Length: 449
Image (cartoon, rainbow, N blue to C red; front, side):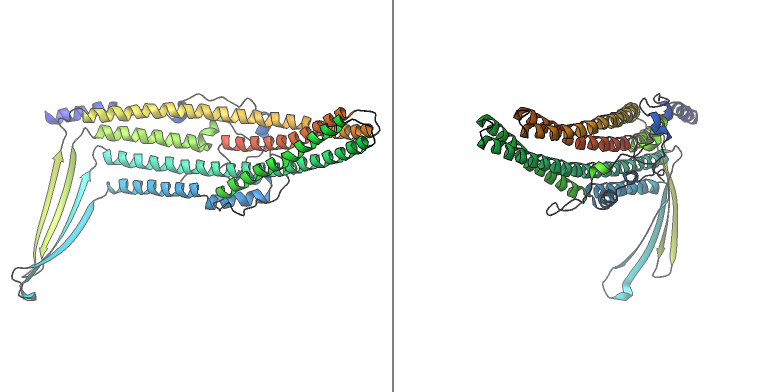
């Protein structure tokens, strides 16, 4: 009767085993991105996606950061800890062996009265219902999750380095624009002063240009501070002290985003570290359900031992034992553990679906941003060139008295804003490309072994 009851319980729990569908079936995926356009024909980049920008300085910076960044170093330690947990879980599937020896003297009269013995023992827990295997599967899945989180951290650090480096180049270019604008303001001030001293213009014109000149001067230290802040941030990403650090030189207007193939939406499941980590966490939750189910069944332990006397003639005594322990009443503890494990599976399914939706959104937003930034930059180039010509004409007309100072100052302001906006527009394009790489999970990396 007891055997029949035990078998019936096993069948019931097997029927309740986790049947989570494959992750590809957890959420519906579109056939294509809305804003991919012609990019789908571009070549797919390898894992070192930053090299596609063709900037040797950026390549060196990212390589340095991946080797020396302290957040990455901490993440590597976390991965080692997770790997050790897998090793601990594996140990439960093998026999445990131990040995020892002892010696004693009853009288303390020297070495002639010493008795010595040795013993060895072995124990093994039969994993008939798979609890140890489930624990090992959970540990392995947790290790996979930690490894994918580390891959995501490396992607974040690489993208932060690229964005900060491009921002430094943009700030330096904006400084050049601001200094050029300051030179123009000083030249116009000299013209106004000369005309004022000649009585050709009023004090109003001179005061207006003094204010314009002061504003032009104020922009330089502001941009210098931005450059310093960015360079110190980059040095920390590289694992270096910020004192005395100078970022490498580069020309941001000579850099252009590469053509990035976003792949198909279904490929995100194999590329995004956060989705791969979420999938591993779901596998761990599934394994925990199996372990909670196995806890309802008996546990069987086998043990064997050998004791040998080493003095007074060798004597060997062997022993073999087995034990069975079965839960009868746990006050709802086992049932609660199973309910909790099943609830965590549902939680992980919801998190995985939400992470997938966020990933799909990130890719299309980045694709759209990259396209609109390119269109915007085309117009900014036109605006910069036209405003430069307008400023030259306005300066000539003011010298000859054909126009007033207001027209000249407006032309100068328009040229400065257009030049400054063009630099920021190029930074926006490069940033959108970085965001797209992050959204699709970086380049095409090898699967985790």
